[in-house]
Image (cartoon, rainbow, N blue to C red; front, side, top):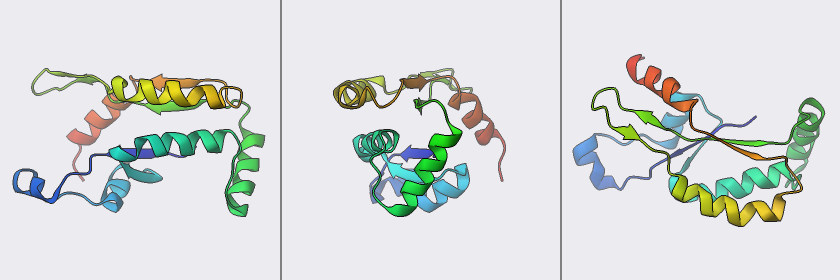
Length: 138
C-alpha cells in the first residue's frame, strides 16, 4: 500500500522556538513514506484514498498499478494509523485526533461504502515505532 504522513504546516515564526522546520521532502526521507502532506489537506487525502479504493483512477499508469493491486489484494480495506500513547518523558498521554476524523469519515463513507469493506482506525501501531525513531538518532 501507499503510506502518507500528515504533518503540521507551521508558520515561519515557529522557527524561533522550534529551530528550522523540516520540508516535506525531509519528512519523507526521515520516515521513509511515499507521500507527505500537511494536516490541512486531511480531507483531500482521505478522499484521494477512497477514490483509489473505489477504482476512480486518473491516469493510465495509475490504472495499471490499480489492476495489479486488485489481483494481489483480495481485501479492500482502508487503514488509518493514528498516534496514541504516553510520552516517556512527561507521562502525558497523547490522544489521537478522532474529533477530526470522525466527521470526515462519517460524511464520506456513505458515498463509498459499497466499494470497500471497512475503514480500520489503528491507534496501537504508530506509538512504539515513532518512540523508537525518537530514541535512535541517525
